[in-house]
Structure formats: C-alpha cells, structure tokens
Image (cartoon, each protein chain N blue to C red):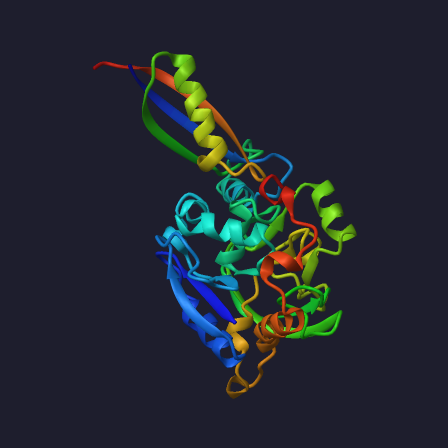
Length: 86
Length: 246
C-alpha cells in the first residue's frame, strides 16, 4: 500500500527562531496583531510503500531521525493523510 | 605530510585550503565526495561552501557522502580532521562534533573579518598559536550560530573544547556575528583531533593579503606531525568513542 505522508519540521521550542520573529514582526506591521508565537519550519511530502499505517509511520520516523530533521535543533510531526489508490 | 582536501558538489573554498596547506609545507591533494578511501592522507580538511546546495540543512546530505565513512574511521584512529565553515556544519551533522549551526540571529549572510581568541593551543590545528592569542580572520556564512543543549555547552567548556571564540566588540557592535552560544566560533572533539570552526583561516594565510593570521592553523598541522612523529592512531590514547553519539 502507498501512503501519502507529510512531515512537518519546526525549530525546537526554546531555541531562538529569528525567521519566526521576523515574520511575526512583519505580520504585526500589517496590523495582524492577533498573531503570536510564529515559527518558520519546513514541510516535506512523500509517498511511502508500507504494509500498514503504523509501518509507514515507523519508517518515516527513522527517516526523520537519520536525515530529515536535526536532532539538536528541530522537532518533527508525521501526518499520514490517506492511503493512495493504487 | 599528506593532507586530503575534500570536495563535495557545491564546495567552494577547497583551492584556498589547498594553497594554505602547500604554503605551510604540506602535500595537499583533493579527494572527491564519491571516493571511498583517503589515499594515505595523514590529515583531512573539509572545505567551506554549499555542499549539495545546502539543501535540507547545511551539511545534512554531505554527511552521507561515501568519503565520510573513511573520514570517520580516520578520526576514530586519532587522525587530524579540520572542518571550516560548511566543513564544520558537516562534522556536526555527521555527529563527529556535538551541536549544530543554525541561521544567524540577524538573518543575514555575514562576510567580514572577526576577532577570535584561540582558546587552546593543544590541537593539531592550533598548536602554532599561543594559548589565548587573538587573531583577526574572515568569516562568511549565513548559518553560523552554534547551538547545543546547556549540558553539552557546559561540557565543552569544562573539557576545554571551545577552541576559538569571538571576542571584543561593543554593545553597539557585538563581536559575536551570528548569535552563537557563548560566543563559540570553533570546537573540538574529546580526543582533540577533530576541530570545526566557522571562520576561514585559509582566506588569510598569505602576507601578500596584508595579514597571514590564518596561516598558523596549517603550520600547526605540520608542526604537530613533526613533533609527534607517531602514526595518527598512536597519538591519541583516548579515542573519542562518544563522538558518534554526541
């Protein structure tokens, strides 16, 4: 089965995120005063062949640990949207 | 002394490293990222630049280049390894040095001379300096903010592993160009044979440029090799077993 996976990577909370701060300042300058806690990260989308949703998630977790996310500076979340039709 | 200068796709400081080694009296040669052995190198230099276009994160893809397995073995055997700028980022990503380099606090790429203090002259890349000697050498990076958990930073300090530190400046013009934790510009591993630094000593290693403040990084390597007279593996009594997990 093929699974559509979205990995969301954000700077670890507590670490200075100057990009997030700059975007937050810009939003406020545009009068979006309700915006707070802005962080800029990255999204990685991929298809994964796996027997089950759990198996897909386990593999993607390994991908994150080894390559996709930096264990010192980033946190990640894995979202498995749906099973792709074959 | 044979010194391998690595080349990754997107490296751009390797000619300067080559020349700096040559000027210091070493025999430099290039190795490609796809090579799998070090061709008898006594030391390995990882250059600055933008390996693999800095895709994903600086150094994130280079750490899996075929040559890196050989670099890891060389380092574990006590052989000297220096990473400058992107080379430092690669060594951190590869787990050969602790911590990581993040986007500069000011969000800008900063290219200018900085004053750094050589905190410890007991590494293969600093032994021709005096302890706490201050030198002015260039930086050029957008992601040079060194970060690590507090306990790792404490450990780096207590084990005298902060090798180079940004110093001087004023409240208006802080010396620290990137927001680096504890003004750290460069560190070494526990066995002290693997050194990474953001400043570029190779860019200021010829008196014709007005200063050769960086020259002694490479002279250090030659001096270290001459003084030791030992094979890389024999020099280090404490191998850095933790280097892959830090």
